[in-house]
Length: 426
Image (cartoon, rainbow, N blue to C red; front, side, top):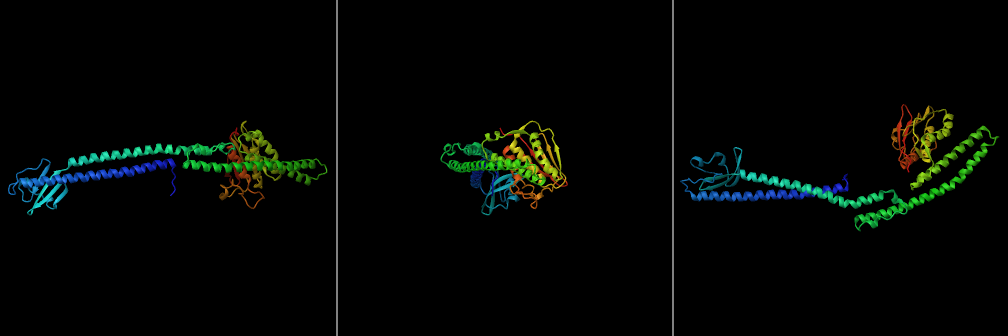
């Protein structure tokens, strides 16, 4: 069985249940003991009163009266002493009798075939029982409330080091290489053991992040040189007047691929860096500037495919964003729209808080819609040579920058991606 409550709530519930169990057992024991003792005392008192009546009066002359709260009857008695029919079936011993909405304690004795019955009104006894029940109930409720309060106080004290440890582990600076260890701040108990385990795990994470940063830096450095050579070669080839149109188109395609590769390398390099100051090293551009840059890149391929490109500039404002990341997000969505649209339109709309990319393409199957932002997931497996990493990269960038991206379908077909932006990280 899996509990959904927090650990502090479980401690409070445990205190309350323990208090309810103990206080309930004590309450039931007190009530049962008092009831039994009082019943024994009343039984003994009634028995003694009945024996005194039998000894004080002659069998042939019953004129002794019982106590004011008692009634005395016997078989063959005269007047008020006549044994009523409702008492003739009682066996010898102590009984509880109800007569006309009143309750009595009764003691029955049989002597020489004659039945003697002494009744005593138990109204006082019932009143004492009600008072006892009320006192026990109030004590039970107070003990339960006290247990909840003590549980809450102790839960806060017990959970305080755990909460503090959780906050330290969640803090982003804890992954920095100079972050101090956690264990020295805690006692040598279970929380201390947990802090030691976190130190070990965070140490391995720091090492992994350090290796990743070194790897991405090395890859970025090594790839820039061949990409620069390719780009320069493409520029020289395009300056050759003897290049035929078909060859010129191929060289332009290679040049565009080189530029996309350069931007992709820069994007992955920035995503791999964890330091906050790295984001500010990237150029900052407005949404309109990035859209105009990408329209210049993608308008040609989109129009060459016979697709209508619609641009709605809107009023996005002058907020500046990380240019590398915004280029990557918008560019991947435009590339994705071009890849899966054969006819119709591709629309880029700027809004006050983001942008929208819509297309009239084949759309995305409903069963894959929620998984489209995962790596290696593609909308149509039979088309293209992509690996399904574009939307995954978009999702990673949005998470890194505090942006959000959502996907919806269009009627009768097509997709709509809405990216909501926030100001770039300081």
